[in-house]
Image 1: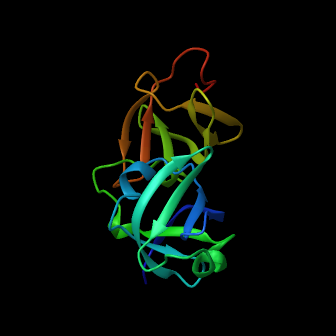
Image 2: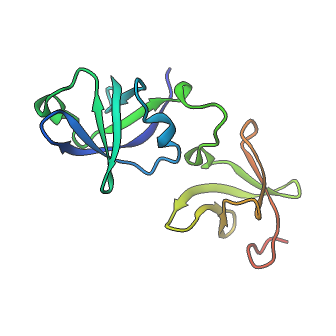
Amino acid sequence: MQEYVFVGKIVGTHGIKGEIKLISDYSIKNKILISNQKLYIGKEKKEVVLVSCRKHKNYDLILFREYNNINEVLSFKNKGLYIKKEDLPHDEIILEELVSYSISLDGNEKGKVIEVIKNKSNILLKVEDDKSYYIPICDEYITKIDSKNKKIEVKNIEGLMIWK
C-alpha cells in the first residue's frame, strides 16, 4: 500500500488557463513543488504532473500538465494535494513527520510530540506527558533527531522544561 503525505489544500482556481490556488504550510514545499513532480489529488489520488508553481499573495499557483483550461480543474477545488512518501527527499527532516516521535532527556523518555506548531517567529513541538510542553526547534534545545528510532533528544535548559 502506498503512503501519501498531505502537501496542501486546493482552494480555487486562478485565471482561465487552468492554474489552481493551493494553501500549504508544508515545511519543504519549495523542494517538492517543482517542474515534472508527480502529485496526487483528492481521496482517489488522481495522478497529475506539475508544470509550474509560483507564489501569489497567500497562495501557491500551480499549473498541471494536460490541464489548460479552468473548466478542467474546477473539480479539484476543496481537495487535498498529496505526494508519495517515496518521492520525498530522503536527506530532509520533514517537520510534519515529527508528530508521534518520543522526546528523551538524558536517555529517559519524557513524552511524545503531539503537534508541530508554526507561528511567525518559531516552529514549536507540542509535547505531552503528564503536562503539555512546547519546545522550539533549534540547536539550543534539540541535540539530536533520530528518524530511524523516532526519537528526539533534548537539553534541559532552565526555564524551558520542568522535568527533573
